[in-house]
Length: 160
Image (tube, rainbow, N blue to C red; front, side):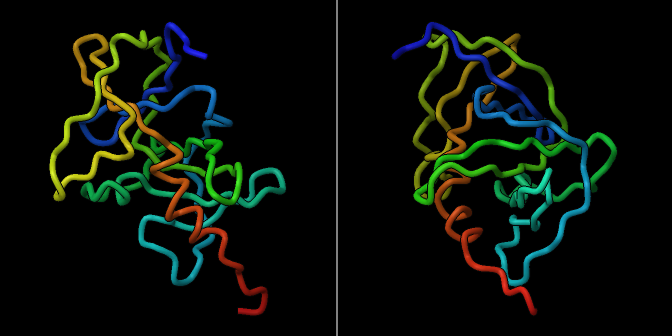
């Protein structure tokens, strides 16, 4: 099934604009401290208890090797539904701020350029020019669903 336009939630990391399929967004919430999980990857900040569900939280700045930024009242956690080898699961991603929901016509999405081994683009579903800005459309399943889902599925010791 091909849609003529995709609705995309856009958000910022520094000066760049990214987008995810709005149908994957479960919730948008303000920054809240997380419970750190020992020996997790640096970009996996920890977990939050959201209405009885334990949700892993990933800092996208750290995941993308961008300079760290202080968490402020404008910092946002976007809770996304991610498909992984372990099935569908919610993850939170920390971003600098949410912009808006936009319609991106399918014909306006261009493939991500191949940048060689030094710059991985496998998690970029495409690029779209929207209102004079380039929006990187993320394949959230590839970005979060692989390595992070596997790491987050490790059992947590109750008596640590």
